Length: 431
Image 1 (tube, rainbow, N blue to C red):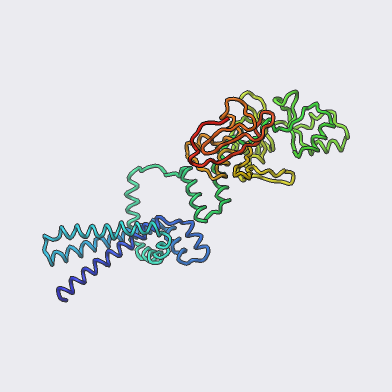
Image 2 (image 1 turned 90 degrees about the horizontal axis):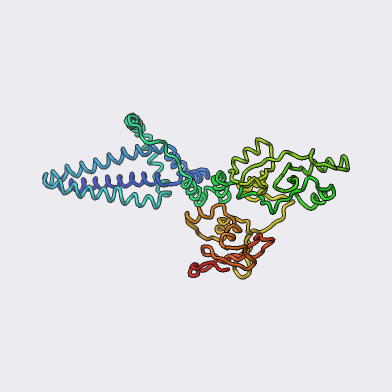
């Protein structure tokens, strides 16, 4: 082989080695970046390449070891070929320059460029390279096994850091990514997010408030009790003595009707009452659900910090916080957020502020979320005024103009919300 052919041969060899370095760098980054759930979805649909990619991801440690072995072989081979041939042709004095040039070429074409490409096209590259990488993993499995054992033995000599756990924020990001990728539909994503938030919700934020409470005095005449049963669609009614702050039991309507049909006259309902179950407003609803389940209770009376009755909470209230509104044939349909002809919205005052912001597609940062977490719209409104507001009174919050729309006995029932243009966001309260 003449000098010219020899030079072309080793230059071609170096180019091939750099291309191989490019291939292995792309494999490493692509499989480190690709979504396993997306590959599993494709594999479940019968994509053979996705099945191979899933195999690589399931044995990712072995895949990384195989890639590192191949990458080091290619890098060492490229450096050796260049050094030998440069020394033979130009002498030892040219080795330093050739080493610098080779290092830069391998770094750019064999590391930086392919990894940048692989991050952008991780799906297609993973699918394209999975077959070859699986084959290399099988061929080099003995070497990978030996090196893995040596590495594990060396690692066992040091204490190391504790187990890495996933933070709640990271879990939310994972759920959001899976929803955007299509691995979860929107309803499934919302359900999982609700489950994560479930443990932080307190009774005070989901109860039926005292002003909406349907209750009867223990001395209420039979006719009035029957009339109340006809008007209301409740299966259980709290019973108090003297004042609603002194609840003495829970009356099951079914038990009362059964007794009424049997005796036709009920003079004292005390013997029909179930023992009331009391809970404080600061109790977490996940703890309460376990307690009510163990006690076989369907309803609990919520107390404030002074021991007075704040409201009631049912198992249905708790489950609705997890899975959303539960409707039955006795419920009256009510739209919480209604778009008005002028482009504003009529909002239920009992809605959470975060729910309203999400429904209106308004962004808020983490600091704002902490401020309004578990806060309802009426609470936000009362905080904005120095006195009890009247219908028509307005205030600004974030980029919304919020107006009191309906009041009943000093209680806000509905609010009118108008989203302000960005240039109108600045400004104080208007009353």
